[in-house]
Length: 389
Image (spheres, rainbow, N blue to C red):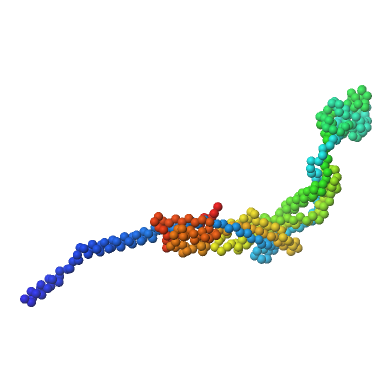
C-alpha cells in the first residue's frame, strides 16, 4: 500500500501547472500599451522642433582716432609713409573771366598788294584800300610793292563797327591815278575780323582763381613726380600747398583780355599705406562694438582722413580719422541662449526676444502643429539670424 501511495504522489508532481489564458492576454495587452507609449515618446522626441527666425536691428557705430604715419614705423599702429616737400615757382598766362562789355572796334585783316607794272610802288601808312563792297580800309604800316611783284600788308577798317567784317575781296587803291589802279591793286583770301571787341575788367577774384588753378597744376605735377619714387603700396596721399608769394603783371581794375601771374609755393606730399590705415580703423571700430554684437561692415568709402600736423625733419605726420560701421547681433549673444527659451510658448518667446534693442522682429514655427511650447531638448531648437534690410 505504501508503494502505491508513493507512485501516486510522484505522478502528481510531474504534472505542470499551466497559467490561465486570461493572464496571457493581460500580459500581452500591457506589453502592447507600453510599446505604444514608448513609440509615442520616441516619435515625439524625434519630430518636435522649434525654428526661431530672428531679424536683427542694425546699430550704427562711429569712431574717431589719430593715426600716425612715418617713414620708419615704431609701434604696432604706426603706418608706413614717405613725406616730400619742395619749394616751387611757376608762371602762367590766363584769360580774364566773365562776359565783359561788347564795344565797336576797327576790323582788321591781311591783304596781298599786287604790282603788275615795271616800277616799284611805295605806299605810306594809312593809304586807303577800298573793297568791292565799298568798305574803306587803311594800311597799318607803309610798304613798298616791288615791280612785277607783290607784298602782304595788314589793313584796318577806316571806321569802327561790324560793317568792317567783310569776306575775302578785291581792293582798289583810290590814292593812285586811274591807270595805276588797273595794275596796282590788292586781294584778300581771308575775311576781315574784329569789328567789335569785348572789354573785360580784371578783378581780384580773377587773380585768386588763377592762383588756385596754378597751384592745382603744380600739385598734379608734383604728385606724378613723387608717385614715381614710392612703392605702389603707399596709395593713400595728402598734398598740402602753402603760398609763399604770388604776383601778377596786371593790377585789378585794368581793362585787359589776358594777364600773367607768378606763384611761389611750398608743396608737401604725404604718402601712406592706405590698406594698413583701413586695418587699424577696423580694429578701432571693433573695440567699440557693444557686448553681444559683432561688427558686420565698415564704411571705408566714406572714411574721413584729415591732416592734423607733420614733422618733415622726422618724416612723421598725424591724421584725424573718422570711420563708421554697422554692428549686429551675434549668434553667441546671451539673449539667444536656447536655455532661456525652453518651455516657453511662442508668444512668450517672441516677447522675450523682442525686448532686446538688437532684435527687430521674431518669427517662431513649432512642429508638429499641436506642439505649443519650445521643446526641452536644445538640439531641437534652431535659431536663424536675418540681417534687417
